[in-house]
Length: 178
Image (tube, rainbow, N blue to C red; front, side, top):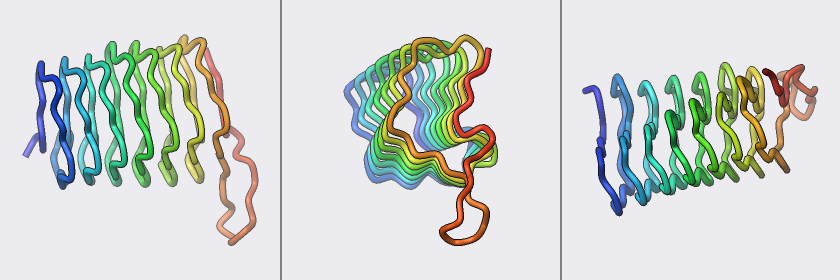
């Protein structure tokens, strides 16, 4: 199908313990929705595992998003969301904030083995990105296109060389551009 779970102009919902795999667009999608809890879901092999568009004040916690184009994707005026303790491995992008996704908190997530970036911010400002693990990605954490006044602290970004216990720092472990 195109979508696993779809919320539009919806508030105060709890989406918990679902398996949303093999959807062409997204496993779980929120559009113009606020104050929802998205917790403990599995969203694999989708366009986006979890997608928030023009949605604010949501909690995305403890989800597993693997083998998607985007593990967790926030786009277009998403504000004051918390993205916490999710596993976003083996995607093109682990966690992706785009196009005025401001004042969000991204903390304690695991974003490993993503082909492009573990955590990516584009045109997104005043976000807090802290305590995340972003290993073996194209880039660990990548900020671009007027992403200003973000707080990036206490993250682990290591690029493995393929030998157990042997690590080198990625050329672009944390890259700030534009």
